[in-house]
Image 1 (cartoon, rainbow, N blue to C red):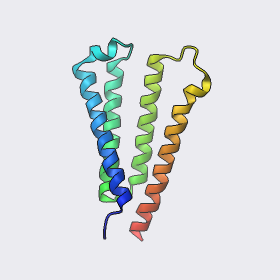
Image 2: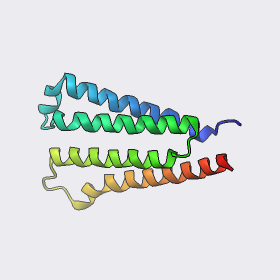
Image 3: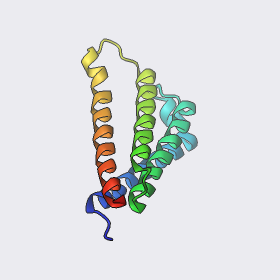
Image 4: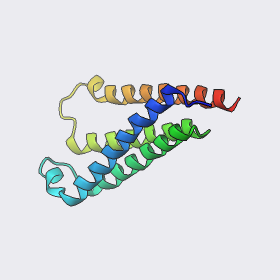
Length: 129
């Protein structure tokens, strides 16, 4: 059975997110002054970048091999993204920003995570049938 083009594209996309997560981990551990200089804490960002890279890697593997746990991997990635964004926002602060501007990134990424999880659920169900 041929792999779906959509799952191949999803796997390719998440492969690059995996690379980005681990690149962020490397920069946070090797060059902490790059983060500290702008008010970010590399001791917090490094483990979160590792978590992000690991969950994105799990989605990559699950999408490429069409595993049944792909939707759960996407939801875990979404959770890791939420925690990373929240930590980042706490570190940079939200002085005087309107509430909608603070909430919008979470809503956008929650919607994206939900759409991807729904798509993955349909694809793995169709493949299992």
